[in-house]
Length: 303
Ligand code: PMV
Image (cartoon, rainbow, N blue to C red; front, top):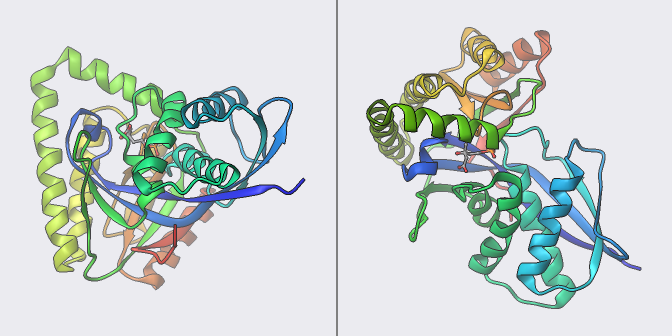
């Protein structure tokens, strides 16, 4: 039987992760790397992939999306593509969005983006409990977005005046996003005043970054990334590997560097002055045993 395909892109969070869970704005950008799923009717739901996944979670997400979309049949889901599943790049959300698209093709449904996003969120909840939704918005809409949790989540599709180059470095350790979110929640409950202060600073950084991106003053972005990273350290999500990779990125000439996504491992991003500077950052990371790749913002990936 012919397999049916669905695709969705990954993302990097440029500014505002973790604080976004509590209603702060965040800016994220789609990257070229994609999840491709293929589905095939089967006796039971199953996930087949070379990537590192937790099968029970993937199967839980498949079932949640089937339920939301009113699909009674079961499927083998082949997870392919070139979006690493190691955390921070929105792979679980991209998986859910790609799956919704494949199921829509199977059922001959024409879904609009809002419907795709809503169905995908049901799967994303299996992976992350109560995610802010930023990852599934990114996987659904692509581009560069200003996001805020709640009714009017998609605040703005950002026009990037001067495209910029980012190096994404992997710490070598999977990011336990749900655990990191739970730890931040505990910190917030233990010291609400301190958290509020950090939250306000994060909000301010996001709006300053928005202006800088729209006006094309890319060199100022690096400093804002460093300020954002300082806040991420304060809330305890930047572990030793994150700190090491960020130090290497800055030493190799990055204009700014920070965690992207959940932290506690996962990925970090570095703003490079240009493509040549990005190559130098990549070289340094690889020399020190860290996997990495370069992407541009905005990229031309189609969703
Ligand atoms: O680690 P990722 O790519 O799943 O990103 C999570 C982003 C957080 O802000 C930490 C959590 C959320 O739900 O927004």
